[in-house]
Image 1: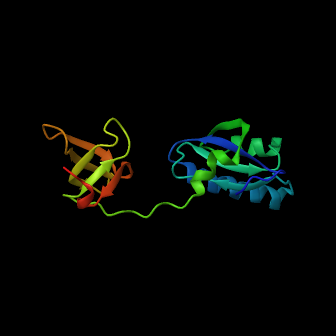
Image 2: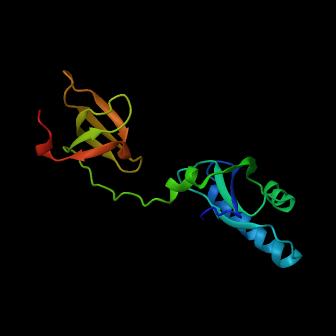
Image 3: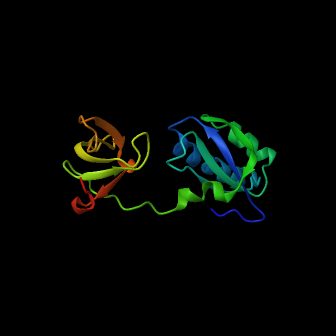
Length: 163
């Protein structure tokens, strides 16, 4: 889904958690409209990025009345953001995900975001289901347990930590 000179990208607001189902239904109904009624909707592509809750991105030649009606008739849609988007705004959703690093209890990590950004910590517990890790800050005078998301940590080798 790369925006060209002849197509535009628009965001469609949908009920959170229903993005993928709404995207599938939109494609299905657009195909049916072409097949049964012979009406071209101009819909080129639909994407529901996992990280973008509450929105579906559509690529269209033009935002036609037929397409607007089709979108508004879907049960979980909340409207269309009328201003076209630049591809650069959603480009990062297409970037390959970094390989997951296995972090386990006892590992030394660096916190990458939040109020403790840059702090080094030792992993106390790992909650895979919630994708959260509880760590204790190493340089704090009293051990402070802090719970952070897995993607907010960087695994350090033991020799990198000078403490």
